[in-house]
Amino acid sequence: MRRRKNYYGSRRRRRGGGGWILLLLFLLIAGGAAGYVWFSPKFERIAPTVELPATRYWNPKKPIGIRVADNQGLGSYRVFLTDGVKRILLASGTFVEGLKEAKIPVTISEKIELDPKRAPWILQVDVADRSLWNFGKGNRAHAESKILVDRTPPALGVLAQSPSIVRGGSALVIFQARDSHLKSVVLRAGGREWKAIPYTAKGTYATLLAWPFRQPGFQAEIIAEDLAGNRSVLRVPFETINRKYRQSWIQLSDRFLNGKIAEIASQFPEIAKIHDPLKRFKAVNEDLRKRNEALIHRYSSKVTPVDFSHWKLRAFYPLKHAKRVADFGTERHYYYKDRNVEVSRSYHMGYDLASTRNAPIFSSNPGTVVFASYNGIYGNMPIIDHGFGLYTLYGHCSSLLVAKGDKVRAGEVIAKTGKTGLALGDHLHFGMLVQGTEVLPMDWMKANWIKSHIDQVFKRADRIIASQKSSR
Image (cartoon, rainbow, N blue to C red; front, side, top):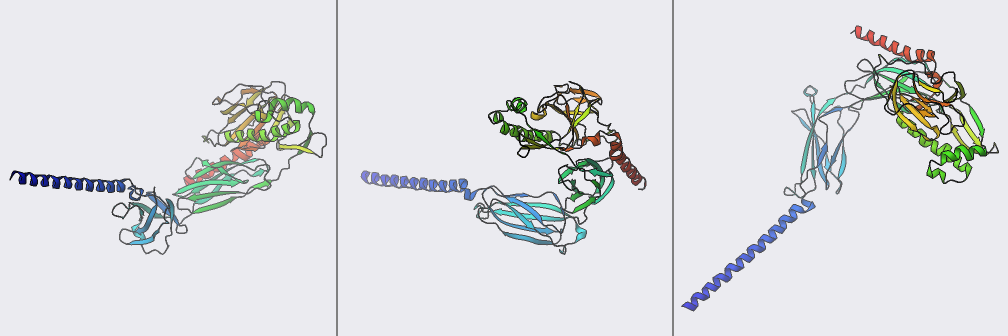
């Protein structure tokens, strides 16, 4: 009996041990499966993203683009439009496998059968990814946006403008751009866009612009676009004066090449290693000049807002008793011995004014110094921001009496003339820029021009604005 008892007891122990092994094996398999599901990219749990603004302005002529993305791969999508009672399917489909970012194009017909009295309508977007999570249904995202119908383009009108513009010169335009959902407004002219800033009344704008002197033709137009994509274009009818600019041929001397040019080149390692004097000159006159002018354009491109009720300019007269020794816009051709063999070419971007040695340089109008340091061929050079996109530049100075960030007053001495940079004699290189484009300084140096092309434009616009306010 005792042996039989031990026999059955050992059988029970063996059976119990096998069950634990099976249970452990089951737990290991289940844990491995759960771990696989949890960590496998096929079962990822991150929902797709949908870029949809809270409110969208709709122009029936333009499709709506809806950006969607998923970290592993997009699956399917459906887009609906509802007025709260009726719901219409606008688009549906499946993305190409592996696609992580896409733009869903949605077109809404003008004849869509929704009640316009129930506006705003609601755009609804459902997106799923290709994950096997959620029993193979994947992760889902839902987004909604109010749709406001806007078929009306912005209303444009010129209030006042400068009577004419000369090639290389400047002009002022003040205009209206009215739209309850205005997105952008710019003035395009002379091959580029000019930033307009708000003027004194709501919906009015002002901009200084220029006709770049190397641009053969000129046409100005105001372009406005609203949030629905409606666009308006209005041409500004300027009288254009096609000014001609000089050309000059300059012979290079060995003294100049081995003196001034070698001196400038020594400050720039990539140019200093050029041993051929003519190639070194070309590097200074073209490559270094290009870098120096890029710096000037960078510091003079910003349009600083101004208080138009106090933005009054005097004629710019930076150097007393000065003689003009070089013109703006001159195309300079350099040769060594044979005039028919051109070594290099450049354009002169300002006026050269000469007086006495180390003569005081004045800021004729108040402003903020945005740059005051050495700038290659321009030598020691301050740049002053006078607001509204208008800048002045003073090159070749022997000494600077202002620093970056200084506020200067009208009539303040800011520097002394010199011959730093690419200058042989003591003089001032005086430059004027509008939104980063060099313009004819002579215009801004004449009180009559400022009166007829700037001051009177402001006055005409102000009268029209005042008249519009009184008639309301």
